[in-house]
Image (cartoon, rainbow, N blue to C red; front, top):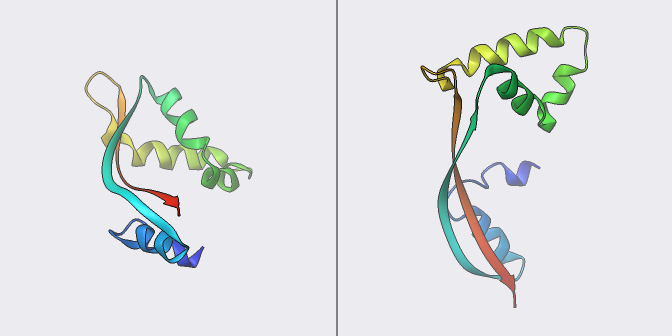
Amino acid sequence: MRQLNDIGAPGVAAGMLADAGFDVVEEGVRVSVVEWPDADLAWRAVSSVGPAVPALAGDEAHLARDEVMRAIEGWRDARGIYRSRSDHRFVIARKA
């Protein structure tokens, strides 16, 4: 995993693919937006990803929820909708 630390930096993933014998067809950036209508669905979504599992396995899982919800409070709009924007870099390559 240490080799992947910079994979999001421009050119890194493309270079890894080229080094492995792939021809890079396309590189780019895209934006995705995910919305959840309320705090309960926002928590369900955020807590369902792999890195959350260890934090939720213990007796104090409620503390994780409190901290996460406090951290994403800035995602909530005036209507109570949580909105997360993510910028993603992508590479499309094919094996010659």
